[in-house]
Length: 264
Image (cartoon, rainbow, N blue to C red; front, side, top):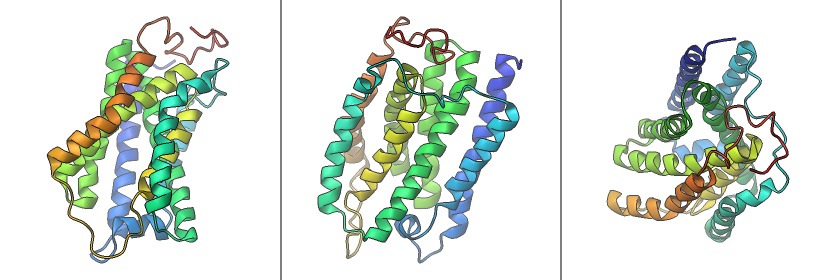
């Protein structure tokens, strides 16, 4: 069996390569006349697909069987999803009334965001969490994985050229990522958060998509930061509450394989 420190180092290296694949391929596909929205609505996200394929191969070669591809548990686990579901319902209501994408574009966005949800969750709440939870105590591992998920969003500046806005996105991703990881721990499965993540990205993309005319000026960074804190702050607090005690988060090192069926 691989020592915990060695496994974490390998996991971190795999996620670094995954991030490189995810970010480099879109820069090769974008040009001066193609926007990121056009790329997502008209084409398959090859960078995301390639990065996901790389993760699956890496996990298989490493022999890791603790990525969380298990049926969620214990009974009543779905009740833990009430707050993300509330957010999704609100975003969907806004997106369906403001979005102007054609059916074909909506289908492509749905496919691409599904791949993003699968790929990002496998990278952070699968591979990286699988290494961190063996190598560190709970809170260092929890915060490290959440911070890593947030920090990778800074690289959005490579595609958009807006470093400050990417920083705000990174903070929002850190807070929502903490909630995702908490749900991953409590449901002892990666599957629910893959679905939540994909639906979140899909509904967020629908909001205001397909608008005609020149793109509006971005809001001031401070305003974006405030709005982000208002929107994702409750998710972060909910995530912390979900893993508030060792009893509640029972089985966090191994997805509760020895205690499945107990609510804790």
